[in-house]
Image (tube, rainbow, N blue to C red; front, side, top):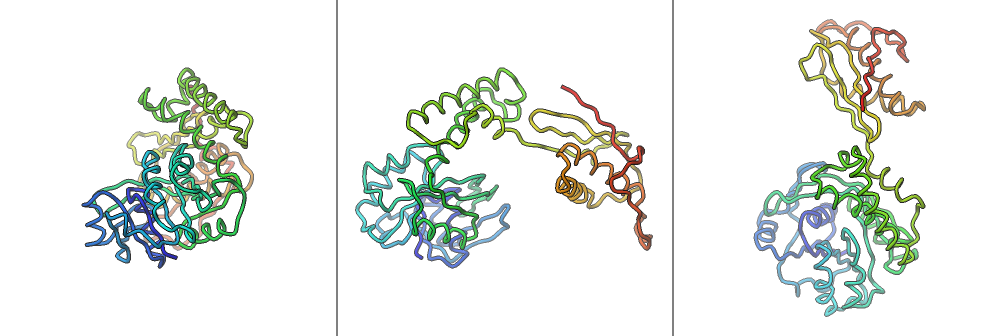
Length: 356
């Protein structure tokens, strides 16, 4: 399959690199001369969660006319440039090609419809995807969850399956959806709920949710976006918009205090609603290497056994304290350590300090 990535910024660079790395014929287009030159001369470097790799089996150009005769066109520009791209693609023979446009927000489909037929057009949503440009020819990959794809007019087709499979082969997690407009609008509601308020108040999503008045602003923004979607007859997957955006914004964070120097070791937990410290005496002359991995594994195990997240963290902390208190020094690891699970010994259980 011959793939063309139009708009080789942060996201487009990740797309192009993955496809090329997995043996697709990839041609990238961008108007940034330095970036295109760097790709052609040195390859496209991608660092971050997917490793650090320079892909040299990739070409780039600033000449749109060189993009003819591709099987898959991925439009990865900003939303306001989609119409301009579509007007140029309309001059090509696209009878055997697929155009997939992936943008954040609304309007891509409408912009394309102004310039070209849409029978060969798919819409995409990048979920949990983050990237940035570090320098010409170098993109940083911050996160990746799923590429969600659907027909512009809905339904499930063989070509949709073919394109989803191509993304999977390129190393992405991808899934086809019968109603992609639903997903686009649901992501749009979350963007409306948090992007504006976070910018205006100069707060993170967590800080917004921790303030009653700012949370109400986010809720009202989301409700207005929902009303627009209802007028468009979007088939939303939820009824309670307020709960939807609160659940979207609420995550759970556990910040370890093992590297501090206080006599009491404090681990901080916050899940958007509840927050507390887990306090335990700081241990001396104990090897701590790998304790974060052990704690994470213990939390995961307790959750798998049916414990709530907060209970799992408390039990895992007690397990870790017990392990550290009974661990041998380096060079003396020739004995088994007897660990009680779950730990019921009060000397290992952390003190829980809740606060508003």
